[in-house]
Length: 92
Image (cartoon, rainbow, N blue to C red; front, top):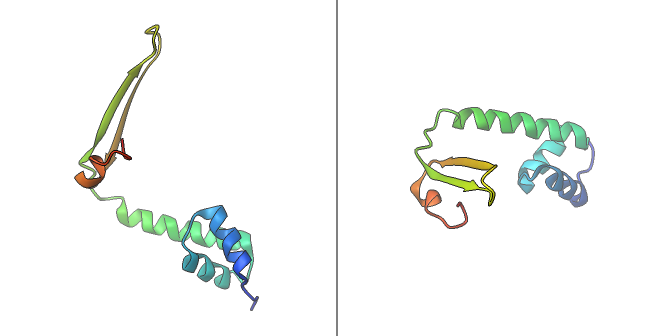
């Protein structure tokens, strides 16, 4: 079993954005192999994503923008699960 150092955990966190303990568990499971740990975290993330797939996203915001000359336009819809997020200034 490979020794898991703090620098290894930090490097994995920077690559994936996962939590510290999740990174440490993935590195332990992968025997210190960074690439294998990334794959493990990706697999776990897909499993977590599948659990959330059925949730309704009834709140959100719609934004529209047109260029000054009127030749280009964009319409964006962003959805979320709660109204607290949808009304947050950082969300919009």
